[in-house]
Image 1 (cartoon, rainbow, N blue to C red):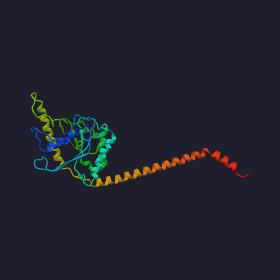
Image 2 (image 1 turned 120 degrees about the vertical axis):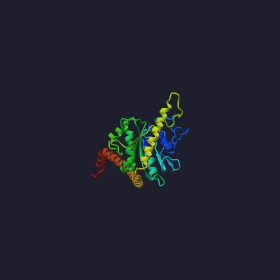
Image 3 (image 1 turned 180 degrees about the vertical axis):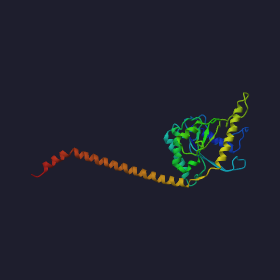
Image 4 (image 1 turned 135 degrees about the horizontal axis):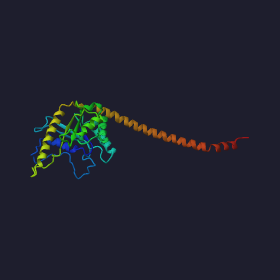
Length: 284
């Protein structure tokens, strides 16, 4: 599963994965595109509109030795607000609860830009949301995918370390991560006269190496069954329904209490008049 904030480069990364798996070379005159990165669309909105599942059944020529399912999610934290983020979480919950949905998971890939010096509230929200769905038992399956990376240590790794976000750590305390730079994915592979195409070719080679390392590591991660997750989500749904029903009953009770209070105030207001009327009507 691939998650990240809007603008993190997640959609291009997924496209990069597909091209690597299908064995596309720098010299090829074609590229595959699963996720449409619409450049005319506002970058304030996620390029992915809803949770999407891509299934790649293994065949000859794949650069990996297994079939793969990619759960791609819309970017968190775009201008449509927290309700949009909650809708994404709801879609994920429905996917994992469904009888024919995803039943196990190998890696939860958190995509973050290399240059970020601190973990934003949105990115922290992504971590917390994942744990709210799966529980702490999936923390070992979280992997950090750093985009827009170069040869230097990405500042975002230190930011994640300092935030104490739940994920596997290396011996130096930094999170287990993989660096990517997909700037050359859809670049023109014809060498320009000024030689700038050589840089794109270099970035392509770096991307291929990063993908190879990532998928080799993915094969060794312990798969986690989502049977417990399905039960947790089912119980949570029941609890939410119970709370909703209780809230309705509490509102009705408070409304009735307010009605009684108003009647009591009316009686107190007219108590003197009632007492006087009783005195006038009492037998002498």
